[in-house]
Image (cartoon, rainbow, N blue to C red; front, side, top):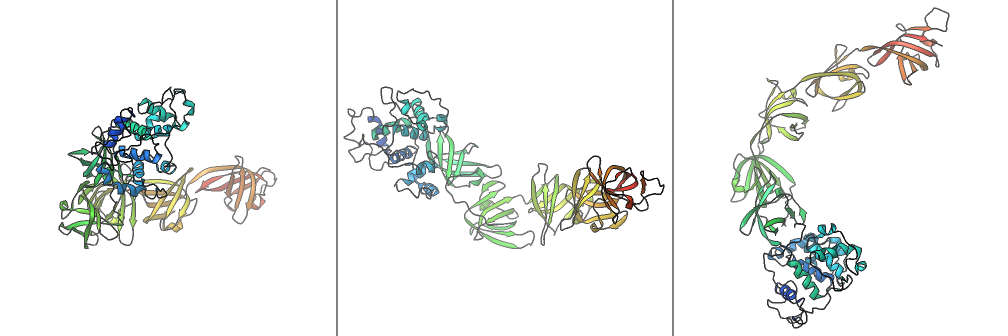
Amino acid sequence: MAKKVLSFVLCVMMIMSTVAFGASFQDVTKESHSWAYDAIYDMADKGIINGISATEFAPDVNVTKVQAMLLIARILGYNTTSVTDNINSIYSVYEEDLSSLTTIYKKELAYLIFRDVFTVDEILDTKLEATLSREEAALYITKAADGVEDMKNISVVLNSYADDSDISESFRKAVYYVRDKELMNGTGDNKFSPKATVTRAQMATLLYRMMQNIDITITKGTIDSVNVSENTAKIFVVTKTYDIDSDVRIRNRGEEIAPRELFKGANAVVSMVDNKIVSIDTFFEKPEVVSTVDGEVRSVQTANQTVQLRNPDTTLVSTYEMAENAVVIINGVDSSLANVRTGDYAVLGLNKYNKIVSLTVSEANEKLSDVTISDIIIDDTYVTLELKDSLGNVESYSINSNSLSIKKNGTKVEFSSLGVGDKLSSVILKYNRITEIEAFSQIKSTSGTISEIRISSESSVTLMDGNVPSTFAIGKDTKFYVFGDVATIYDLRLAQYAKVTLDGATVSKIEVSTQSQNANATGVVQSVNTTANLITVLNTDGNSVVIYVSNTKTKIIDNNSTSAVSKTLRDIKVGDNITCIGVLSNGVFEAQTIVITK
């Protein structure tokens, strides 16, 4: 309902339970209760408020909170046939929440929760048999008139009432809301009397005023059609079919749902304001799909409600029975079994009894364009391609191995030639299985130092280009070359310089070669390993450098010695200051000249 006070018209006259039309109460006359006379009799004639007997109304008896809630429920259509036909379903949504209450009005309270007038917690926290105060009545009327949001925006001017300080802070804005909307007046002498109780005559008057300012129709409706692909639906109400606009609130058993979740023929309670639908409530049990099957429709028997389906992978034909209230969707639009045709592609949603609860028909033949292979999944029975479109959406499709044709870069190839990253200009689907592929790939290469080698069912190699790592998946067809010789992944070593050739996103070749560059280091010797011919130097930049010293290729000069004889690694001691000139080859610092300066 729009967040404003509206005028009220019930589409179905509410049925009165104890007081007949034309009621006559001996204790309500124009002389005794002139200010409430019209309200009491109008409300009584509509069956909203009853007398305590056929001749007595008890106008001056206080109203309890639960009685006020009961009257508000009736004002909001509780007694309309569209609600009474569904009240058991409405109550079932909140029955467990209200189980601790002892009142006989649980269904009316459930309806108020259902209509968002009160929350479950508000109902449970209320002393239902306590009398209703005027400030509490102000909040009840505000909630019933759907004025809570407007109430929040009210700027309260303090001392507008002489007894303003007596109004509880939690009720203050509601008091001024009902005053501004002329739904509730003061009690005289510019007082509101917030703690005073509300009598039956006063409550009848308050609700009577509210009825003049609420324009809502509660009626029945039937879902006319559903378009699943567009997420839209239509509903038939009384004599007219309406589009269900995007701002219409749709609920099933109290939970909000999308239009696509409705189904043709579902009954609904419809709330309308100014001939515009504002909410739709349905109460159907959602069918539970526990498994799905798909394939080619071989036959349809509308008489016994069965469908024969052929599995494109196994060619096995199976017969399935439609469950009661099964939903049939054809090309995104709600339909019926009579419109399903032999040769259609269908997906069946089956319940635990293996009966069809949903039957979705789409085109038997489909063409995809401009997609990329994001993954290839191979198990014992099927091969599945995950294809990503230009928007990043990924869908999985299995391969029809019985009739598969693949071309890559214009040449007919085997399936093993496809790889992750390949671009597919055309993919032909039949019964949602891939039968034809037109692929192309771009050959590119990159290089760097090997920083990680992973050997497993999903082997990979990581190259460092500067400080940037890149990891590449290795397939069963990847070729390896180490220093020109044919090799395997087991011949790769960390710190080797490698060139990786990619066919799409798949590694087709890894080549290990020598890469050298000039290097130097100056600093203090931290360790000497004469067995491995390695020394570690704390460089002047604060980093430790591991240097390989060759027994035959490295020249070592000691500036502190008068001898012209070249030194060996054993002459280098921890703590020596050295300058080393050499080359960085495949990530290893190989010394050519070392000068011991001290």
